[in-house]
Length: 334
Ligand code: FAQ
Figure 1: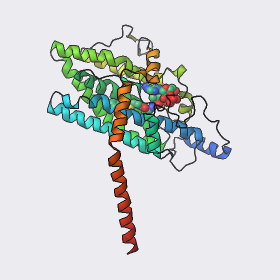
Figure 2: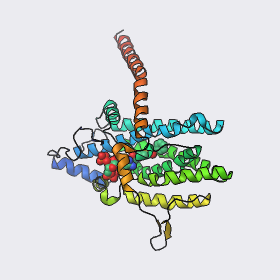
Figure 3: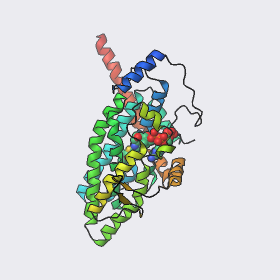
């Protein structure tokens, strides 16, 4: 089953919440309502802990799997400058994954458990990373659209109710904003280039537009987790609210560089003060979640290989830590 439920139980069969002391629950809810951060050693309802582990681990996996589509272009970047920037950007995504795994570990789930869930196909990661990067313009489109969508989703998460997650998001958002600008700058350069370069940019926009809208998750009426997550102030805005913000911000950016958003239904709605946009293919979204994305198998094979190839590094780090601890103990005994 393709789920982030780390209990290993089939979806929909999670344990019913056990009796939780009413007094503690009331205090927890009052703190959340007062916008106080909940910290790792604070009491929290089990369902809150589970929801956080689910969302934060899925987020961490997305960052790390998300290194693959752009990593694919590091050796083929068109100039030394573009290569250096891309290298730094992909490295940042790895760092985001690490902060997020650390934040999830503070909730009592080990890194090994999370990685096992990813590699065995039980854990989700963002659907967007199951699409291939076919041209250099895709690197621009990912920075502009994918990082752009990620920022919109993550800015409210800086005020999420769990302290370690909120603090991780502050740094992540700063870096994502640089990523978004570097992507847009690539698109701007291509769009102002030769007709072939402009076609390349348009083709990338055509392929990444709809999957980027899907990143925000299912529509609100089909989002089983949103209502509770908003009550607990884990999520601050709904999937549809964030998706609309993304469309409203991104459409003028496309127009500014002479590219066309691939949606014939797209038009400004004066009364709503927002863009109306066409129907999203939710069947495609569900298929990608089921693991049927165009390059889903390649992504998991690459992650599993990286994990296996890195086994000697983990073993060496562990042996070093044991040696250091023994040395410290011997020094203390002197
Ligand atoms: N892909 O009830 P909801 C990035 C699942 S980071 C796959 O609405 P929720 C940086 C959802 O997990 C991108 N699965 O769920 C970067 C749930 O399944 P579950 C990642 C999805 O949690 C850029 C089910 O559908 N960002 O891009 C997706 O309330 C460039 C029902 O959905 C985050 O993870 C999806 N798109 O809302 C890196 C941000 N959407 O777990 C490299 C944090 C939904 O019950 C290069 N996460 N699902 O089995 C969130 O804000 C939320 O978790 C949502 C989903 C909004 C993603």
